[in-house]
Structures are given as C-alpha cells and as structure tokens.
Amino acid sequence: MDRKKQLKQLYKEITVEAGVYQIKNNENGKVFIGSTPNLKTLNGVKFSLENDTHMNKALQADWHQLGKGAFNFDILEILKKQDDPYFNEKEALLELEKKWLNQLQPYGEQGYNKVKE
Image (cartoon, rainbow, N blue to C red; front, side, top):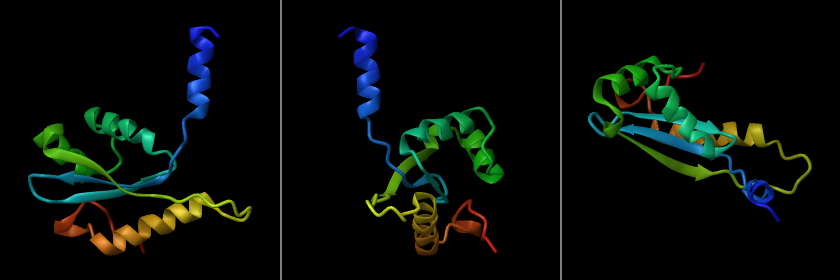
C-alpha cells in the first residue's frame, strides 16, 4: 500500500469524539465553557483566538491582552456514544454542556459565558 493510501486509512480509523471543554484564564481564573462534536477541532478554537475572530468578545479581549500563555484548554467530559437509533448526539451534547455550565457557573466575574434565557 502506498503512503497516500496508508494515510487515508489511518484517517478513517480515527475516532471522532464529541465533548465539553473549558478555556481557563490563569491570570484571573475566568473560564469559558464550550462544546464541540469533534474535540480534535479545539485547534480551530485556538486559531480563531490567535486571529482575533473568536465569537466571545470578552475572552478574545483577554487573549489579545494576556497572550496564549495565560490560558489552558481542558477537556471536561467526552460524550458517551449510544447504539440507540434514537440517540441524538447534538441534543445530548447540549445537555452535557448545560450540566457543566450549571456546575461551574462561568458567568460574570467567574467566566466568559453569557446566561442563556
């Protein structure tokens, strides 16, 4: 098998994991809680912060002021997949994110998230 075919096969074998993550500001302790259907895309979140295009303006401002060295990215929980044909991964991921938002309360002085009404 040639190199290109090997790489394609390896890519197909990579498992995609959904989950909840946090970005923690080590200077002031504030956190941002987010979720993604593919935790491997966290590099894209870092990329958006480094290029001043992140959707959360307060987080973006602190990142710009303090630099990437002031922040840690942590995976809080990986969504457990289910074989149930009625399992809705998107809804389950939102519920998992809500659980972490309720637990950590990353609002106001404690975080960058906005309270959803």
